[in-house]
Image 1 (cartoon, rainbow, N blue to C red):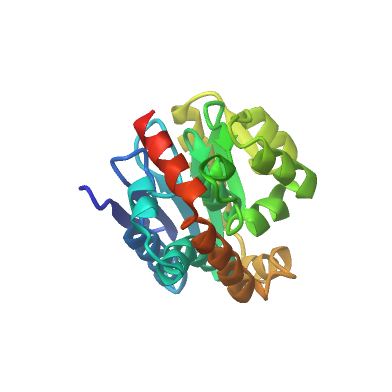
Image 2 (cartoon, helix red, strand yellow; image 1 turned 90 degrees about the vertical axis):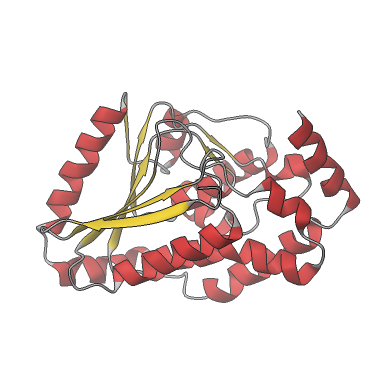
Length: 253
């Protein structure tokens, strides 16, 4: 269980749920990122799938972002590029999926976790699902997730999150900015809302949904290159003395 898991379940109605889990607050080590991206792509290509729900397990943190143990173990720029490209792979898997992806965010989303939520097409959350882009605190920046977060909430709000890196913004704030479409009070209400919306989408014309997906993501065709370039920036910064010391201090706190 230390490496985490990714599971998939598809109902007879064509609703596929992809769930990821990691015992450290649903953080995403490199291997889990790769597995998650591959699962999103594979599920998207399954003819039995009409709509996808993307969620994490547990009742608290949705996703704590990068694994600090892996961050501190990065020894060169090539390894840094490889690690941060994991988030790029997940975002691009969501972006290029022909299926509509519904996000289910039950708790806090931090760093790369905000990027995962932003990469979904329609996102539900609980009132506990506050958000924080904490990358500057440890000496890097939200470069890889930046384009997908900015696409959802706009550059001004993205700048607020990125620069005020030590503070959470509420789920209500995230809803007002467009990251979350709906915010509810409990996990029970969250599950009910997600299930009802997924059933509604599954009844629509699948060809129309695919065409709409392409329209919604128009202008992002260059992201395969862009997100790799952004991953290289983070991969370089993670090697700095500032970042090394900041991560060690963060882990010790």
